[in-house]
Image (cartoon, rainbow, N blue to C red):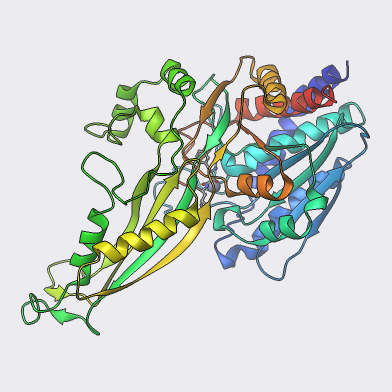
Length: 459
Ligand code: BES
Ligand code: ZN
């Protein structure tokens, strides 16, 4: 059987794949930092050349600004479905550097893991699909289905190039299935298929008072302090029970279904281990829901940053001119970033104390994702493929993170995405000492190769 020849090729070339992944990781493609623009382009070229070498027609799609998209396709399987593989070659900044035990762009193997920025997010995970395609093209001579690759370089900065490509050339990206590996397994040895992601509505609020910083003795009590006002506003977002206190906020929230609550409760999740690992005195969240339900399926509100006044050494009796905060909401179906923006606008009008003005700016937005998993042929094919790669059946989970492209794929291409994550929850993505299990790298490659076989058998 063809798939056996693919598996043999993957086993034979596994070590070389690791070397290639390390070479890709050594390129510091930090999309947020203009100093690394040339490196970011080098990472794009690395992916481009790898696709070309295995026989995929590939090119860089260039844009007036930002980073190019690597586009590749191999459409030699008439009558068979087309799979779109999405991934990103850019990475988060490695800073702060002090907590890194090994240099962020020098991939280092330890205890079966590869430590480096981008190891799991998303170079290691993305690369599994390229190597799976190579397994078919070099091991058998052809792919069993049609495959398109869209590997972008602006995921970590919320760039606009991918959306413009999807909006302007949806036919070029047309597909029957999409797959992304940029999520995690449930636990070591428990691979997962993610059928739900949260959406995101992110805001920056600046509160302004007098035209200059003031002496808090001379002026305090006579004019409003923007930091005090900001604290009042931020405190009004949530109640003591962990519920969001913005009127109308829960109107569009789709409740968890009974079967989901039952499935989540069945998963081997220890609240005590979770608590102890984080060394918090207790877990906290919306009353009436379990930790997994809060993490995966209930909306949240978090202040992400706050500034104003004086926070240097020693005291300074200042009444600051302005104060600011960044805060965001993780959303669940059927909430939308646009509707949340309207509700926040109305809420701020109602709660902003007198004596200050404010400006609210909407930043990132992403829709939530919920794929009908039961009876979905793509999910069923993915189940078999993950089992082939990992040697055990995957569990169905939701996740609290957001992947905006999944919403774009649905909107512009009309397709649900298969979220097949090969990472672990403790991979430290976006943090120091990011890692990816090399065993999971190889299992992911095998699962991807089998996904192509499973999808080929469907039509
Ligand atoms: N891979 C993550 C998303 C993710 C994290 C999914 C954890 C599931 C579990 C992705 O790279 C990411 O960080 N997304 C951002 C999106 C935002 C910047 C629009 C996020 O979730 O904060
Ligand atoms: Zn990321």
